[in-house]
Image 1 (cartoon, rainbow, N blue to C red):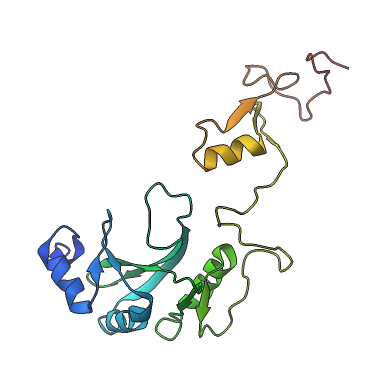
Image 2: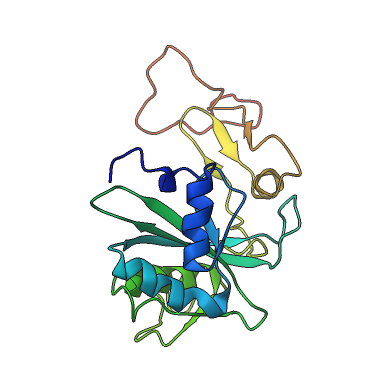
Length: 211
């Protein structure tokens, strides 16, 4: 099999035939992607594993504020890859209302930490995972940071060149309600200048005058 294998191109009939052989349908995506019902995930994964595919990554998505309507709020994308003929396929699995998906750990042990990350950041529960617990955020953090309704921190971030991130403006920009994310503050931080900055900025009044 060569690198020009038509099964790597989502626009070819061979790619659609290959997915039909797996019992799934192609997804409308720029990358080779298959729509996999949650109930068929383990079956499809086992077929791919027997064909030599390996699991590279798993990511979760929250479509609650997406511009196009999706079948469900959450989905998980599993990135599988064939190390010899370089085929790549993304398995898009929409999360049912139960919020649960079958774990791929019985098929690929690499799913262990990948699914823990999706669980931690998005809240998707993977059934039959051997150790489903947080892997990135503190144990006492409530909620899942990659959900669109997770509250963004309220501490303005000030950069050395004078830009700053205002929390409310940042949230508006992230959600698509505003095009601008940064602003400028006067005083001791008027933006870029040719003068070298001291290690610590001097204290100034609101008008920018030294105290």
